Image (tube, rainbow, N blue to C red):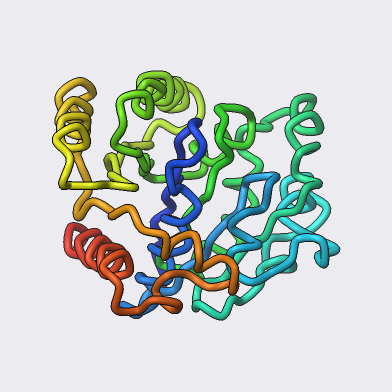
Length: 256
């Protein structure tokens, strides 16, 4: 039986919203629940690659060569200690946007590259750079759905409208079936009225689903990449790990 995968672009052009943490942690949680998961690092900073215990400077090939058609995705995908497979990034990816700008069909190169491996996975999570450039548009063009991690502070949601405009354009021109899964509240402190108010404002202003549970703010998330693992391995019983496990279970239940 052919495996049908769900591809999710995890994106927010604002940095520091726990986007990479969410990709790594949700990926590990889905593996714990028996799903085959591929993580794709599309950020030239290669934070996802580094946080999963792989030094980008030690890599000879990465997603950069895949996007330029020099390597197949299957030739570059690596396994990780946390369970998901990884299509890693290096600083070379910084030059990919310029290289792709002159290519016909540049918005579709990632989708085409993933077609050869998608049947091997249940979930493919795309970690996007903090911008709305060619790499993010590639991710949106390849994705079935978009997840928007959002820090619950006033200034953090100002770019959501711009991101949704980009999603609208992608629907019109390159990926008619793209949908918004919802907003994932991150770095959340439920003790403060401000955080709760911002979350309510997002839901009302943009009419977006709010994914649950909110991901709590904790130093444990910053500590995990130092040992090349996700919080599900470094602090298994911590409430942050529990939040991502519950998020994974909720997402699977919604699709059952």
